[in-house]
Length: 141
Image (tube, rainbow, N blue to C red; front, top):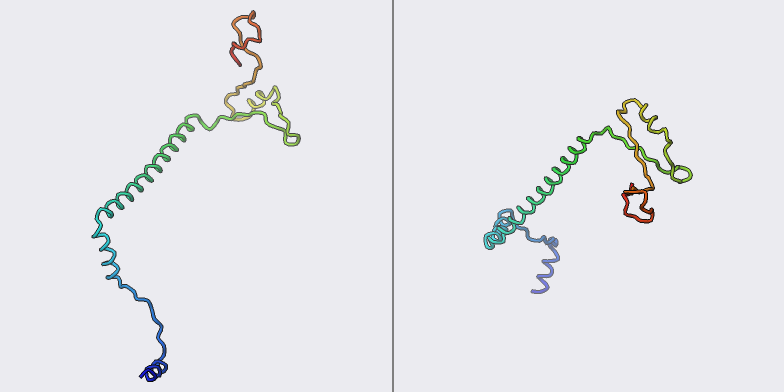
């Protein structure tokens, strides 16, 4: 018999085996079985997802309101303020200074409403001339 079985198998074409597949109904049944058997896990998973989504909405909402507040404050300041400061020379890299008549030149530019200047003073203010400069209790400028 063994020889006879071999010859029958050799005569037939060998079929490819395919893995068994679950149908959509079986997949739904197996998936819902886990949900039905552990309802607390389902509840906690849903709660975690809800908390995560709420957190993301809160973070985006806070950053949007902060951005809106910042833009509102910038609008109050106005976009017409320009500050010109000395920089460094392009070629030598040394510090440069603005000319003394720079405020006058800037005031002549069309659309400029007002001009102001500031500067650094390397002195300090004392209550009296009798206080020596070595004492550093003065008001710095």
